[in-house]
Length: 117
Ligand SMILES: [Zn+2]
Ligand SMILES: [Zn+2]
Image (cartoon, rainbow, N blue to C red; front, side, top):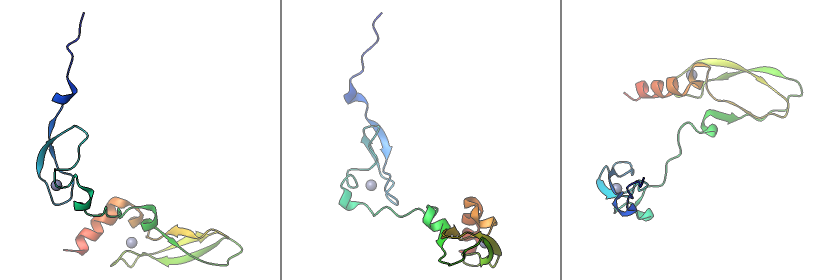
């Protein structure tokens, strides 16, 4: 039994440009992401750093403690006054920036959305 053969050239699809704010539709390969204009990398915006990268969620806390100790911090989220305590360990300098509630990406984004209203 023979299977029908597909010519790869026919696999062109209607796509939506992935460039933020563009939204143009175009015909392209299934892997194509950008319209004709934005397939030129110079026309594209620099990719924004996602808010929820690790650096954004954490802070560098320099200290000289030699024993583990609980240190009180304030949530780094604008408009949130929650405080929380972190157990700080010797020679460990990266700690969460946000209160327990705002360490949750969804809750944090929701809080920011409400703040910007
Ligand atoms: Zn585009
Ligand atoms: Zn908070």
